[in-house]
Amino acid sequence: GAVVSQHPSWVICKSGTSVKIECRSLDFQATTMFWYRQFPKQSLMLMATSNEGSKATYEQGVEKDKFLINHASLTLSTLTVTSAHPEDSSFYICSTPRTSGSLGEQFFGPGTRLTVL
Amino acid sequence: GQQVMQIPQYQHVQEGEDFTTYCNSSTTLSNIQWYKQRPGGHPVFLIQLVKSGEVKKQKRLTFQFGEAKKNSSLHITATQTTDVGTYFCAGGTGANNLFFGTGTRLTVIP
Image (cartoon, rainbow over all chains, first blue to last red; front, side):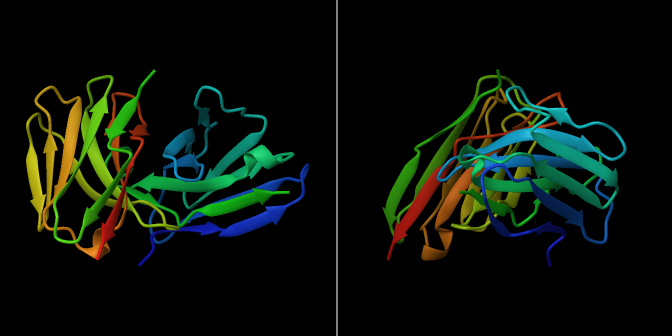
């Protein structure tokens, strides 16, 4: 069964609004959560790494004030796309390592497809 | 910066034919992982290789990690329609993150 849930699975919003995406680990503690963005027919691009109780680390070129990440508990990490614009339309997906603190097997959430009108 | 390239970008094969995708990193990797993503789905872990020159098999799938730990390959023998999807390699570095390859989209023609 799924070990990482993601909500919502899809969202359509107007330009200028903010959208919150939640990733929850089920039955285990996710110390680290990776957030990716995937454009159609492209690879997964790492946006940021969040660690429970500390500030997220953003990859180069990713605006931290636009993509707010919160990892307040060991089972929940959230990504908020603030003031979304059509170019933010993408597939957002989270993952967490099977073994905490390692870079081994990743459990991925089912993803959130965001469409900004 | 870190780059992980995969070739080919697309591959169409007749069912029963073999398929290989190659992964190349610009830097030495600590490990390489392979994932499969079905259309509309999320990546699903297939395997991890850690040792230089390592070869692992899973039924019809053979995974290899290069001696220099900068390249890897995935070979599928006698493809089936269930093999359809995009195969990604993901390289682990000394830093705490994974860099995904550009992916190879496999289409199997019945």
